[in-house]
Image 1 (cartoon, rainbow, N blue to C red):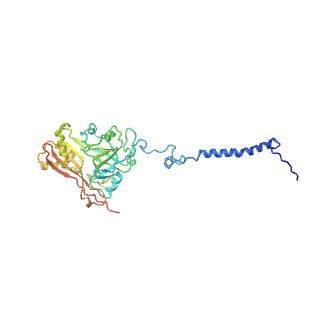
Image 2 (spheres, rainbow, N blue to C red):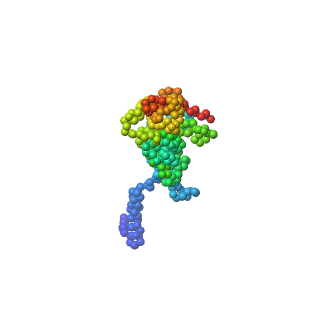
Image 3 (tube, one colour):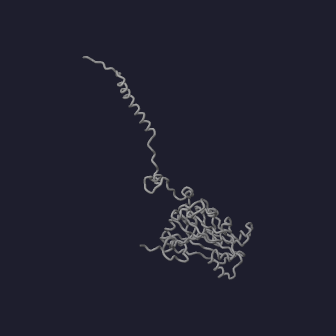
Amino acid sequence: MIVEPVPTNPRSPVRRGVRLAGMTLPLVLLVGVVAVGSLGPRAAQPRAAQAATPDPAAPGTSAAPAVAPDAASGPPAADFPDELGGLAVEDVAETLDARRSGRSAGVVAVAGYLTVQDLPAECADRYLGPYGAFCERRAVLADVPNRPFSSSYGSGSGFGGIGAHLHPTVPVGVRLPYEVVDASTGGSAAPVAVALLGRFVDEDPPCATVGRHCGEAFVVERVAWVDGEYRRRTMIIDPALEVDWTDPAWRARRGEARAALGFDRTSLLTAYLRPDTLERVDPAAAVAVLARAGEPPPVVWYVRGLELDAHSARYPAGATAARVVWAVVDDANGTVIARGGEPTQPREAPPGP
């Protein structure tokens, strides 16, 4: 057998180059694959970010992503309480649904973001004390913490940007916490997280037609929780009266007046008033005082509270059963001059289609 030896190195320079390339190319490819694998796959963009990023190729879009009104400056979501005065706290949407379906009666507990617009000067000047509640205020209570009004810090989101909302009235005599008032002065009209007790009332004059917000007039009885803290301040004092807060006799008379409601009721208001001022706070109570006492005493205590109805079984399933009760007490001798309260008859549910 003849064996012809084959040289391992090509004789020509060209062939030697081709052979060298054939030996090194697999090594280069292997290093490249390892490097790409170490970098990992490209991170997937979050779904929310994808939705917020406009497509530059789509008609009518711009390169800048859309930002919801006040999304950056609005307060974080609040951890509202579950209960106030024995009533379950619901958000605005749930409260409106209960109202429209006839499941609410009397006082309800509702949580949301409160904004007061155009605070009257007579309240703003003395808002930190018990003398600053003698004006009527208009507000918005919403499920979304956006500014509904224009402000010195920029345009508001409008009512379309605050979700379900109410247009409550804060009547004469109801104190607003200083955080709410402070956020409503200077044109800011910033929303504040609150939980409050209030009730739906009949419009005066009644709605001419069934439309938006018809049948949803709402009156605030007490703002009981603000931005994580419960508030117990319910005392108001007639601006025309001078009071020595350190006087033990005066404090004792205040305690006796509060006791006239009973200790099983949630306090809504304690007021130290002249009869003329009582007429501004509660006209019905002022009329009752005149009817029963003739010439009213110069100074009276007006106490107002929340009473849970013991006969709630007579109401529709899921209906609330709480009402406002009040008493007027003579400051001179502690005699109860008059008592009264608001009815709790549930609103009839609208007829079905």
